[in-house]
Length: 421
Image (cartoon, rainbow, N blue to C red; front, side, top):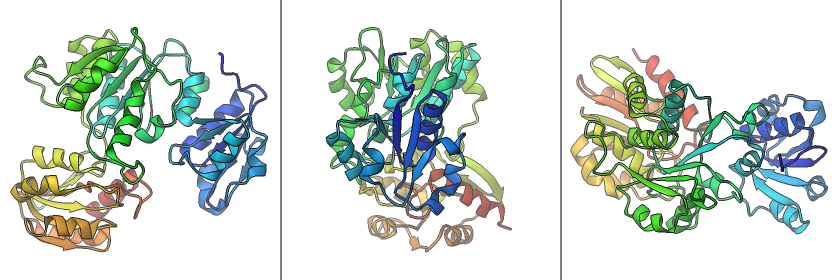
């Protein structure tokens, strides 16, 4: 293992799930872990409780200090931490190597990695790939942006394992040596323009998934994206387009076709994939039927954090929709959905930071009502829906203005629906 942590001091910036996982892995591999957290300690006590050996981990909270960081051999950033903050600048000025959590874990990983990125569909695709591999008798570890940090599994991984990794643009922008054996890009549309200066920077961050691949690796691309057609000749890996005219005619879900392409690259046959697809119940918070009340289906689509994810719901659900939308502002344009909303939505209920933007975008094509909370929105939706309709939480926005994350938003929505009479 070329990247040896024995007796090395590693300072983790950020005490969220990934940061705690890094600290635990450093300790298990013989290094000295430290955590620097911007929030006050009281705000991260729950996360810090996840430290396996808290007495061995030095922690500073309430801000990052140069003195705490300066004696580190490595600084590792949690995915939500920007790479331009002063703490990172101090480290680089001192000649300390700064790694993202994915890069850190990859350098320690003894087995092949299947990495999936995309503006939408990542979670469903990685879940399917992991299930397909397990059904084929392979040892698959599902982790990354799906909610369980890559670093968490490093001490227990073996060469025969396969890591199936969901990876975001935030995680990719800090990669250096990261080299997945199979890299898959599900699709591309506007997203995270609050973090990236423009859509080109966002595209380039995503494209880093292929940067270190060679002719022994696989690059899997969605045939429906013209941007990918232009990208393909620049890649060094073996390029395969999925979701093209040669795809099986009875499978119309591009996430299924993506998973099938990954399985084929790993030597798993189509019949195994079809067995998994037939049994697949979907992932939590993605068009998840919560319950039916008085003939109205209540659907949790909290994972829909972009307009394109909202488009999927609008396209595939057949019933008239009362749609609950809104959340934190990623500087995205909702107007391409105006015609589809006019056709499919009976009423739109908007909440969160983007509620005024959504109201202005759709008020002339559908009745729009502004609510102050998700609780109020659910009650309003119940009154607006009739038997044969569906009420769907499909926010088309991130959740961080009102909730911890999209999972928290989805769980609260389900709790509210389950309390309805």
